[in-house]
Image (cartoon, rainbow over all chains, first blue to last red; front, side):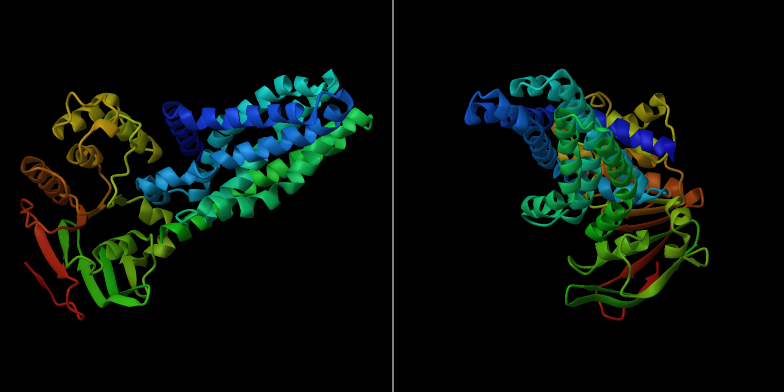
Length: 222
Length: 213
């Protein structure tokens, strides 16, 4: 089981390295969206500080959404998904591996960039640390929950839009607690409660999402 | 032993075939025949367990395959319409990664040997997207060289291959059958598999008549 997990993660990471355009596009999308806000809203530090957590989190959601359609689509097109479904191990393990690989490729770069981009919003050091921490804890949930949407819309024409409609509402709790953690730090309440809830969402999202996703993929393969 | 009892398939509103049955013992090969759209691929996908039949049962050693689940998939080697190779990977990487995923570690020299056998020597380090259709098919078929799982289900294995490669694949299937394996394949080309009991099954007529060759 662990062997299969490692094999899937290794394979997907290697594939992502061969196809860097996808990765770079999502990261630059994140950078540009976040950077547009200070330019559009104006330089008042007070206002920017208030906007920062929401803007960074929404941009992270959208950037994740951008990279989701290819999670299963390529494997579906070239027949690899069929082979994965016929492995003598549960398809959910394969899905879990793909979710982990997706996070490493699409989620982790956002986490690493967040403190840098947060400076544009005049966030304090404490707030920057909590922002990065909240993204680190919360973005795996985005990959996990997103996998369900990607599985359900696999092979559907115009699936990208449908997928956004399915997945974005499910991202709302992650957004609320993620952005809330930074807000709570700024206002001095302390982020622990928000971060714990975010952690719970991630555990739930990453470890329960593979099963419905695997079921959706089996339907798509019929 | 693989046994299919009274299988039927409905795609959309159309009934592709009904009441098809066969029995395949170790060392035997089943050649599925039929016009385009007669349901050959659907039949193969059913036999893999990817789709469930509208009616009928599929038994492996007397037990239904959907109950066996992972146990059945552990004896199954399936090659579908698509090659299931990654364009970004080289043939060698494709072969190693599919063996790795199947939890059957493959030493690199054995993989190279398999590719050589399929005539891909000198191409093993070239990304598959630069290969021709036939070469991609060869890369996908290379795993048959060391594949030891009992039941091979191959959808149009000879498509896009040149004459020499067709004979080579037929030989690989023949060796598999001599080891006591089972093979089911669809093809439009009459290809003689050496030293094999070949059963023919046609999906063309409604109440498929099938005979032993």
